[in-house]
Image: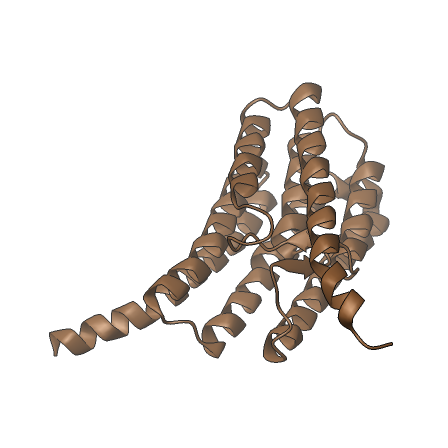
Length: 238
């Protein structure tokens, strides 16, 4: 009986982490509705950490499943599709009235579309070490950094962020998958460090450094992706 319970706990532990991340996304929405934007951003960061560890833990425990993948996508839709757009609206876009709401919804709609496309690629075994289009956590991270600086930046820039990031999520721009191949996961760790520094000391210098570092990683990803594709393109027929 104990062995059976342990097997069940082992199988469901990654899913528990996934649901915990979804809960962080949900409560970040509630926090932003009360005006507690800093709390909302911290909860969004916790959701991001859960999203990193649930998949890794599932692979370590050997409990990866189609159900877990679908649950993870639904959780991402809430934590990185709905939550960032509502936080952005409550922090800045509300000043633009209906236009700000439309831009926030566009971000959510594109995040949902991107996740549906990702699930289809997963079912067809087309996933690799480099995503096509910004991942929803990446886009949410960009939104979060703007929200940190929203009292110093115009709301129109926030609207641009929402629309541009929404477009990038459904584009074919290479973006790192951080799975230990291709682009090293150390870049993700350093990126999280810069994000924490920006959150604790929000100013023009930390914001500029975060954007410069992120731009460097994206450029590096594009180069790595191009080199990986070159051999297959050279040997493909036609």
